[in-house]
Image (cartoon, rainbow, N blue to C red; front, side, top):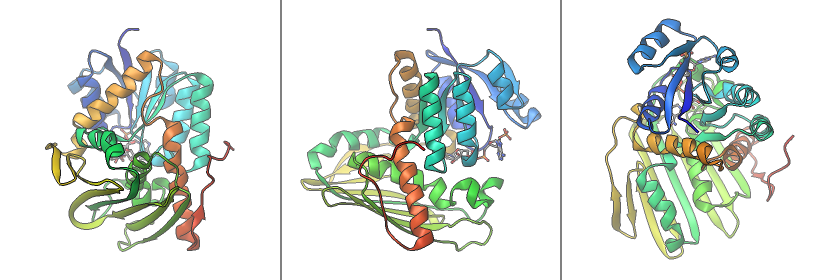
Length: 334
Ligand SMILES: NC(=O)c1ccc[n+]([C@@H]2O[C@H](COP(=O)([O-])OP(=O)(O)OC[C@H]3O[C@@H](n4cnc5c(N)ncnc54)[C@H](OP(=O)(O)O)[C@@H]3O)[C@@H](O)[C@H]2O)c1
């Protein structure tokens, strides 16, 4: 297999991180196309990054034979329809988080990818730092896990991009945008599905429909507890995870510093988040090598579906004020 030809869909805030990652994986892939509603903006970027093709729509790139895989950097509510279209056109997909805003959408995406034999990976970029990978590898030494508390708090005084105004598009603002990070790492670290989801969320800023402050409480089999705390109202960014195990304790700061039982194991410094970095590079390599080797990638859609289920349950819990029980095995696709 030659180098994979990659297209980037949606040239907004997160796209540069993926553009950089493809360029840094030049032994495996090349940037072959940009898909953008803004022709001039796309043309400037294409020239800057030596990208040969620019398309106005996903449909156009899917009928041309210029890409093997697409990175979907589009708003949350477009992920499902775009990923299904890509799969039907037999293109592999790396979709930004969240996989989808609903379980029904996620199942349609997973079914389409399976039917057409393409990879469908979710860009859970916060799994791919050295500190997080080391943490995952060392969990057994401190386990079984008793509890995980993850605070992900940032400062957004207003819309970072227009579609954030819509609760439907974002999947509940802070819950739909940063919830996928927090829920993914809690579930991935536990290595199990939660059995029960409780949640509460409120809106302080009236500039959007969704909620900007939320808390999640997840019960895991074997008396494990997961706590997610999400805020768009912090004065400064805080990203802290505590993992309490039966035989030790772990503390992750910003995904780049890992302390296990009081000992610093990894301490790295990353550049600005949206510019990408080693975690986006490692994520891209995982996607590309999985396609090359014909294996299921890490953070495959089938695996990340649990996060979509948890976030859907959380939205129901917020609406009703009641805890939501999750089935012990995933319900069959609708
Ligand atoms: N991994 C992370 O930590 C991380 C961080 C930030 C965002 N994300 C995810 O990445 C995705 C994109 O987020 P973003 O912050 O980059 O958003 P953004 O700046 O608004 O970029 C999204 C791009 O999608 C394209 N688009 C196509 N149809 C659109 C429509 N109907 N409405 C608005 N945009 C449309 C636009 O690009 P064109 O104008 O070029 O067509 C737009 O610039 C989201 O799923 C988000 O959750 C992930």
